[in-house]
Length: 89
Image 1 (cartoon, one colour):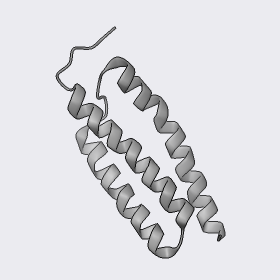
Image 2: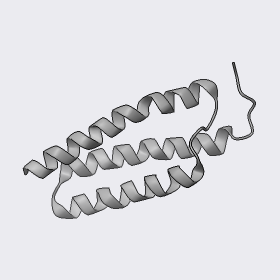
Image 3: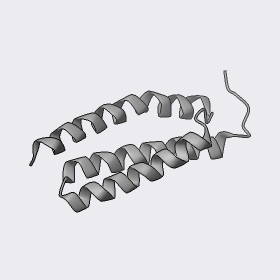
């Protein structure tokens, strides 16, 4: 394992942990609060970056980038699914 893989993995882990409260809030309140124009390019970009990491042999970075991309995809789904539901207090 090279040092770059450790650094990228750590940064992606921080991104993943920081997304959890937003996803939890969306499910709890049944609201999609993230714009589609934010979530779509972000999850697609993360999947592309993860695939690139795989080709470079940065396996841990690739896995963490895929996980972060999946979380952004969940935010995208929340926006699609919850867009017409009334806000629950």
